Length: 355
Image (tube, rainbow, N blue to C red; front, side):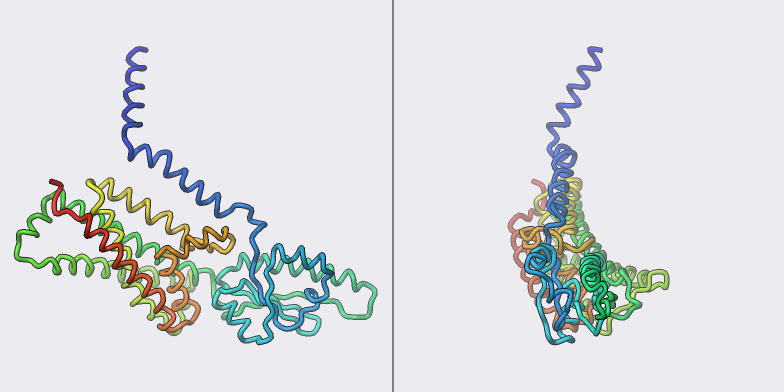
């Protein structure tokens, strides 16, 4: 019993003295609790943006108190230009567009977010039923509700999953590759030998960049190739190839994060931990796995500061939503600026060896 107590105390002391183990055992899971707790806090309180095309009786004839209650769940804006309203749905700016044609109310939705479209459909169905009850026994025809997808009906969720997961894969590959390579080469004294060799520093950096871009190209080919299989049914937009320059700049952005992690870490384990700490939460906060429309406003504002958010969103624009190359320019500028700043910080922390 004495030996058991002594060993238990020693193991406990060792665990609490190991800051890395302590962090990933307690603080890292706690961080995800905070993230998911914020993402899904009070889901009923978030508003869904919809656009109303012209006059819609079920909305226009609501009593004032009912309109006030509806405004708690739907943020309705009016647009008389039908084409402009449907384009807002295609671009993901609103969850749905509501239109009335005779006695039929149509909910136009996008395959980008069928969950929120279903929410709008449920609310409108309740309003239509309420209106029909009020018209019971009256000669006026009852309203009916239907849904129409703004894109081609063959589009599936894979259209929007592919850019998100591909963006996360590019981020992970570039970050982990650069971080682990830098630490490994420093530990094995390869960096010291390169420093003393006649090989220019630009060649060393260029080689790392080339490998990272090549890996991103391979990842893109594999992801798109698998998603195009009939089993999944991916359909690329006409200018899908416009994502390639975006992918290259995105790779550079996350390569700079990997260099920063590698410069700050002394071991491969620490470099991997730092890279995980940065990339994995960023994937959840950037909409790579699921949309953040229902997240609190402050969390969405944080998301807008993350490079992966701009990479994923812009890739969706050109691969799915049919946007052209010019739509990627703002994201390319943001990612390029991010690369320069983070690479500069990594350069300040860089060491040729552990001495």
